[in-house]
Length: 410
Image (cartoon, rainbow, N blue to C red):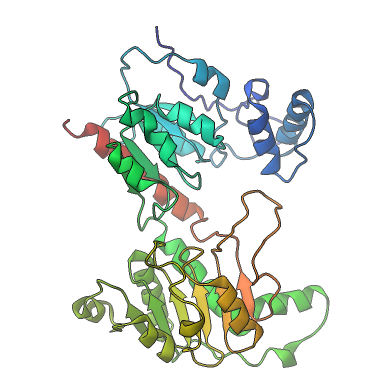
């Protein structure tokens, strides 16, 4: 008989404060899961399994958090790997392979919509081989930053897997081998536009910060050094021209905010029509070069693909106005970082980005970008979609995709 495993999210007894903890069963977690728990919290990950368990327990008690925002505790991977799966199940099974909030797991189990609920395997931070082995035991896979390589779909191709859907809980599907999924008959979906508001807000945060030297102001203030005479060179946004490269949902939200700031907006998009531009009150450009030549600020919101890899490099950056600002909010690799570093180092332009070509994967890991130490550049840690509003919207979008997929006839 098949053993059906579901996630429990009952909080433990109240601690000294009014806050509660989820019930982490550290004894049943693998060494990799224990290390991930510690690494995400900036703790040492060396030691025996027993030492890791003790450290995790101490850390969990010391850092009690609200149950509403607490990620659900992971399940023991080894037990699920051993579980036989040769009996039909009453409910579809979903593997959640990245950290998602507790409310999302709870809703997924109870009612994702259309009266559809699921058996949930909540397993963030899986190794690639574990992901491959578990994916063949589930009907759907939900990921955020976890890469889904072609090997995950091998069992499906061989007719030995029920996997029919992979969802990226974010924008874009560049972390998933979509071609291999298609060959195996597995649908791939993303939550396009769900984080548009959050990314647009951060775009403006960076634009203002670079122009007004907000980070530098704050650094001087914390050193108790008055620096007002150094911070009088901001252009200001009112009356300036913002060029938007990639005018999908995010680009359009950026345009709305720019117009509210009194900016003139130009935009390029391969399928962006003049009628659409007129509707939102922006000027349509035929080429990226046209945007770069005529803008005081440029924000990039293109998806990453072979066609857009390093689509803006040295020749394109040379077209920009002196002291113009370019901001990459798309994907690392759309804007050539080495070329941007050279242009910023020469003082020709300024820049900012939330995404990078070689992003660290662990808390505290060294940043390996040529932009990291440059004056005239500001960077954030790929946090564009990291707001509660955006994460709630993404969670709702995932639930909606799952409900539609599994409630549809056939």
